Amino acid sequence: MAAFEINKGVGRTVEFKGLKAQYLFLFAGGLLAVFILVVILYLCGVSQITCLVIGVVVPALWYGKCSP
Image (tube, rainbow, N blue to C red; front, side):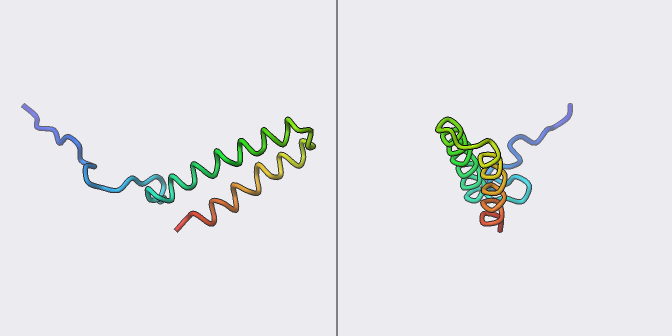
């Protein structure tokens, strides 16, 4: 009968494509905040181009700030 290892990652920090746990949560929270900001701006009547620029530029800057 084969023996399988279970829970190989127990005790390790969470990592996704090089982002460690604290940076991963900051990155996800920042993206959510930018999404909500873009939705609010669009609902307030700001032009689509402005919303698109904010939706692309701000997360790019946020990723550069959060990546180690």
